[in-house]
Amino acid sequence: MEPAKTVNVSELRRMREAGEKIACLTCYDASFALIQDRAGVDMILVGDSLGMVIHGGNTTTPVTVADIAYHSRCVAPHLKRAFLVADLPFLSYATLERALDASLRLMQEGGAKMVKLEGGREQASIVEYLSVRGVPVCAHLGLRPQFVHKMGAMKVQGRDEEAAREMLHDAEVLAKAGADLLLLECVPAELGRRITEASPVPVIGIGAGQDVDGQILVMHDILNISPMVTLGRKPRFVKNYMTGGVDIETAIRNYVAEVKSGAYPAPEHCFLK
Image 1 (cartoon, one colour):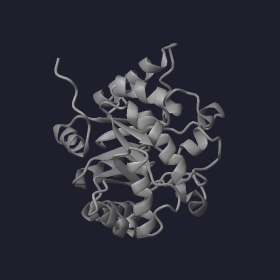
Image 2 (cartoon, helix red, strand yellow):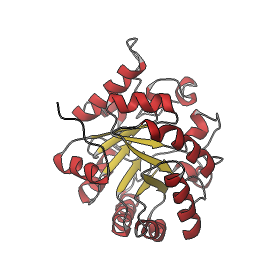
Image 3 (cartoon, helix red, strand yellow):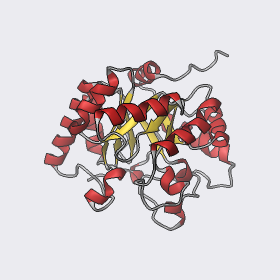
Image 4 (cartoon, one colour):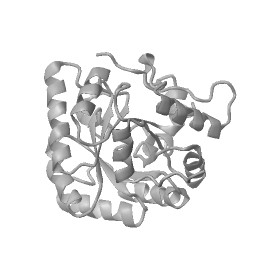
């Protein structure tokens, strides 16, 4: 049997062009990195979600570059195939210089292959600055957890047509600036479809419907152990893959299989408006 290809930016583009869904999860340590890589996860994100599922906080705001670099360093050596992305945390990309310094740490110290930042067209100069210096960038649109204190609440974005057009424009500007990947969080499924069809780069969704190029979830959510789900605040897009008494690796394999087949997300995991 031919060994699976190592996933990189070119492979993600090939998967999109071939219509093969991209299965992604968050990860923060060596043990789960080994399991996820073995289970066929295509892309792993060391997300600032660790501020809640690892550190036990209520938001991602306190997470630092040092935190992300440390957890990336725990994950990176154990990935034979999966592509590693690391979050640029709150205000670490407030200026061009800070963004470059933070990206340098996450890629050199943490072993990440791409960085992710939140924001729309206002981040285009940051994306371009990083991109022309060899830093692959994932741009995060829709619900932006780092902006929770500004937004006031975690809620679906792009519900009305004006907001949808603005997000479509953001996606276009960021891709032109050099973003290699887009991530859409908590948007109506129809908007997820429109952005994906218009985008020249792969689009990964979390609560963005069935028609994006791939899906990502927080690992602790699909294992039904995160504070969010255990306290009864499970987001609509989360599915518990531990039902039926399966072990962790089987749960992750089942998630990957359902993303690949299109079984996940089902209509009940999507926002219609």
